[in-house]
Length: 254
Image (tube, rainbow, N blue to C red; front, side, top):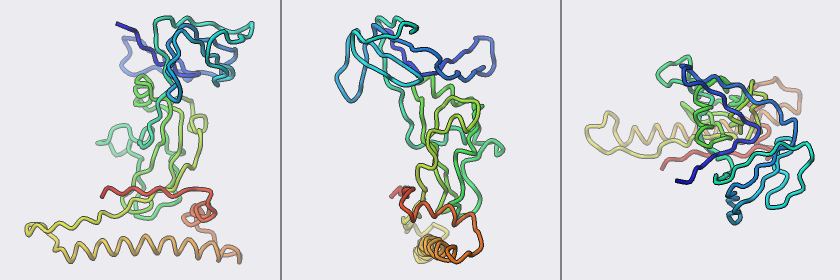
C-alpha cells in the first residue's frame, strides 16, 4: 500500500491519544526554508511529478521540480514513497460558525431578521472550534465560511485559513461576497398543505418585493449620504456592492 500524506503549509497538528479534545497549537510563521523531497507531487493544474521537490520559503511555495536551488539553512524533509497534494478549499461551508447545531450558544451562522447585509462572517469565526483540526486532517486547509439566512440578505462571507490564534490571523480575505438567499419559488399544490397555492404565491411575491426594496433603499441611502445624511450600518455594508468592489452571490435551490 502506498502511503499518502497531505502536507499543510505552515501547519503542525499536535495531538495525544489520551486527550479528550484536540490540543492544537497554531503554528508560528515559517522561520527558515523547508525542502520537501522525494514525493510524488500532484500539481492539479499540471502533470504529476515523480520523485520531485517542493521548496517553501516564508510560508509560500517558492519552487516545484527537481534539482532546485536550496538555501543553505533549509530544513530538508524526505517524503520518498509518499504523495503530496495541494490543500483543499471548502467553497461553501459554515466551518468556524457552528460547533454543535443543537446547542444554540454555539450556533452563530445566521442573524435574526431577514435583511442583514452588515453581518460579517470573519468576526464570528471561532478559532478554537474542534471541527477545524478535523477538517485539516482530511486535507481541507482553507474555507469560504458563508453566513446563512433566516430571510433574504445574509451578509458577507470570508475566506479563512483553518489555523490561527484569532479570527484576524485566520482571515485570508473578507469580504468575499454579499450572500443573497433567493426565496423558494415552489408552490405546494397538495390539498392537505396548510396554505393554498394563492397564499403561497402571495408569500413569494412579498419576499421578492422585500428583496427588491432592500436594494432600492440601499441605493437611496448612498445618495442621501452624499448630503451628510444619517449613518445606517446595514446600508453602509451595501456601498461596496454598488461600487462593484464586492460581488453578490445568490443561493437558489430551485
